[in-house]
Structure formats: structure tokens, C-alpha cells
Length: 165
Image 1 (tube, one colour):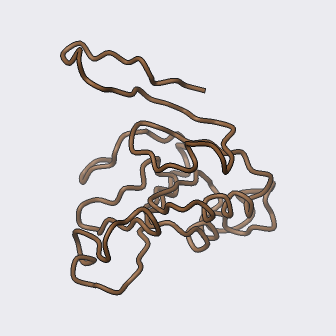
Image 2 (tube, helix red, strand yellow):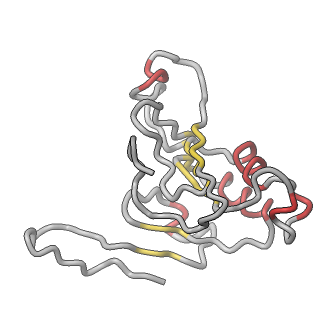
Image 3 (tube, one colour):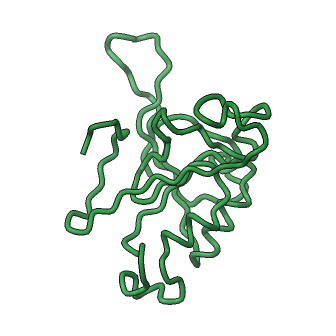
């Protein structure tokens, strides 16, 4: 949908850069699904059901981070097209098997006071490298970062920082 190749940065003409990229129509055989991508890439998957979407993520060999955008956080009245789900955000954060979950947050990377919590093939070694996880050897944690705005439903795409609104 958006091709970020061919980006040229004037001060670094010999650099290797990738601009914002959006990959759509993903399936289990697509390289964007089978490889862990670190860059300005958004992978979009259209699923037939909420449970199918959760399974698609959980079946991936990697478990770094994922995000959901929803107003269904407390009861099903916020999401009339998904009445069987109850609170979509709560279901998602409990059933998704990744280390970093964003709820209405585009980049679920935790701030430095939290541990990096990738899981499955998204972590190398037997311990995480900072925060409390650095000394808690035999635990599997999940960091949930959420942002609820009931009046303004637009969300930014910048990394949240301490003290920012």
C-alpha cells in the first residue's frame, strides 16, 4: 500500500534508508509475516473474526509487539459489531501471546523503566536486558501500554516519551 524503498536523505546520500512502508494482504507465507521487521513498517492483516486475528498473531514464530485500536475497553456497548467479545481490549491483552502490547498506542515499546518483554523468537538468550527482568531469571512477562481518549479518537504516530501528552 505504501512503498518506502528508494528514499534519499540529502545529508547521507550513500546511506541505506527505508521510508514509511505499509504491507497489506498478509498471510502466513508472506515475508512480512515470516520475518521479524525492525523499521518503519506497518503490517496490516484483515481477518474474518477477532479470534482469527488473535490466532494469526499468536501463530507467528515471533512475539515482539502488537497493537489494537479500539474503543471497546470496558463493555460491549462501545462495539456493537462485536457484541460477543465484551471488552475487546481486555480480551486482546489477555489472549495475545507477545511481550509488548499496545492498546490505542501505535508503538508498544515500553519506556526504559519497564523491561523489554519480547517473547518466543523475539528474544535472544535466557533473560531480558534491562529493568527488573535483568534480575528475574525465570519469568515470562508481558507489558501492556494503553491510551484511552474518549473525546478525541485520533492517535499520533510518534514514540511516547515521559512528560508528553
